[in-house]
Image (cartoon, rainbow, N blue to C red):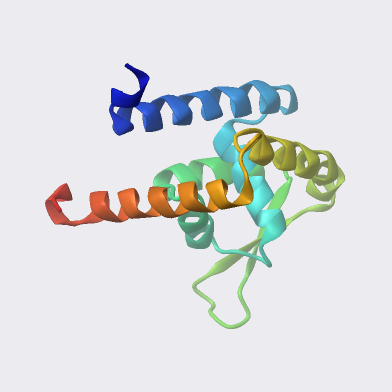
Length: 145
């Protein structure tokens, strides 16, 4: 029976389990999964814009904005003007955010590796490539091949 399970169901279950795992681990820090991953990505990128965070996390702009707004309110992140484009704001960790990020980086590394535990590098690469193909298929107009 397992081999005949619909791929969409398996993807949905994997997504749900990942989300539950992340939510349970980051709740102790007072973060939602979206806030956690936004904070991690702000740390990993060099002063990303809100749209870059949304793109990196494959999140719609309103959801990314809500996550970043909460990080701004907590003063873990600051928005500063972009010297090259006055219309754009760059996001950076504040002193308070930098004080929390070391532990959160380790947590992110553990969470990222948990899903791939037991997979060989080639299997991980194949899975990644296949998921990219599925996403591209679904991004086609009308979702048709």
